[in-house]
Length: 288
Image 1: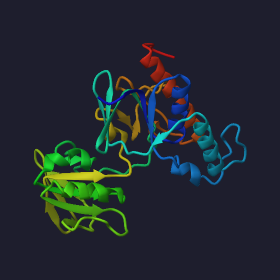
Image 2: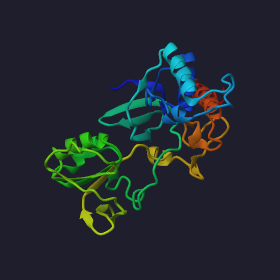
Image 3: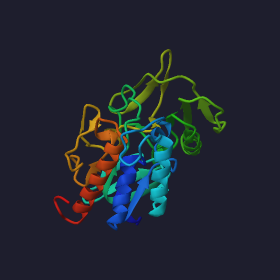
Image 4: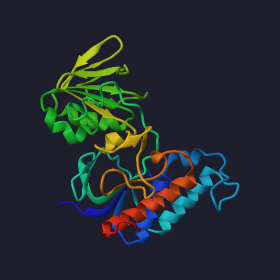
């Protein structure tokens, strides 16, 4: 049985890092998923004047301060992409490539940079559409699979699936040299729609289509409601209260993913609240 953390934090921007700091201070076991380079938006900000304590600063300087702070606290970031989060009652299961993590609570700090779903994607989610090829590959032993990838990480997953499935088509949504096995067919067209009846039957392009048993969409990021089934959204953001509680018990959210304004200082504050709310939840209190 895998270790069950007190808190799983998804996202390494200001909200996720702030939540991790407070989880650490409150002596809770936790794991934070993201990038050791932190949020790319931080480094790209040319000038920041509204972050208290950092006058006339830049994204790079604030990012360095964030990194120094979490390093001083001994916080390690797991550079893995979380594909799905399932509420299991009194705990959550997080699907990360070919691994599973368990946590008693979850804090979503995923930001707002995710692609729009393809037509038919949500309709057939769980009915032939999935987000983790290595997780679900055994289901498609000897069958036809289409893999749509946003970056070159998809090549590794495609090569793995090609050893199990009967036929694999690889559709890269990026340019470059593709390191895929010889038995994988490369398709350099952008999908228009995923079509089926009770399950996926084919993927459609502008002037052609491919009959398939399954479609894996390997995205840089997916929307929170796709990541966590049953999560309520409003106007494209996670719906939560002022204590950062979502409609799912034990699931909290913070930062840009819960709504405007998209400001670092607002995100950091919400990460603080989300962590304190998670701690209160874990300790059996209604509020912190």
